[in-house]
Length: 171
Image (cartoon, rainbow, N blue to C red):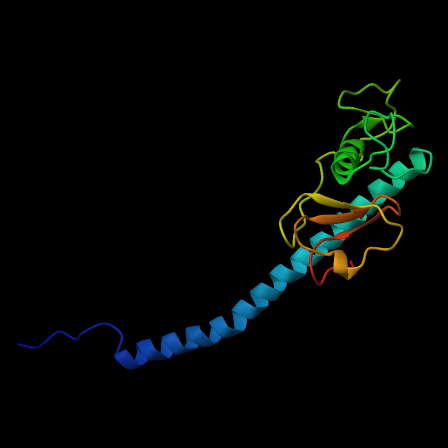
C-alpha cells in the first residue's frame, strides 16, 4: 500500500511567510500612523479656519465686539472666565442681536444675526476636547498658556483662537 502524500506547509515555508508579514508590518504601520496624524492636522486647520471666520463675522456684525466680551443677555460685560465662556458659546451657537443678546429661537426681527456654529463648538481633533479656555489679556496667545485642559484657547480681547495642545500653537 502506498502512503498518501501529505498536503500542507512545511515549517520553513511558514517561517518565511511570517518573516515577510513582519517586514510588511514594519513598513505599513508607520505609514498608517503618519496618515492619521496628517488627517488630524488637516482637520485642526479646517476647524480653526471655521472658528476664526465665525469669530470675525460676529465681530463685524456686533459693533466691533468679539463674542464672549458681553453677557449673552446683552446687559453688560462678562466679568469672569465662566461668564465669558458661556457668552462665547451662546453668541456663536444661537441667534443674536447687535448688542450680543442671544435667543435659541429663530426671530429674525429681534435677533437677525447668527448662528455662526450650527453644530456647536467643534472637538479639537488632537486632544478630543470641545471646550474653550478664555483669556482676556491684550497679548497674543503664547505657548506658556497651553495646558491641554480644554480643546481651544480663546482671547476675547483680541479675537484670537488657537488649539490648546502642545506643538500646535502655530495653526
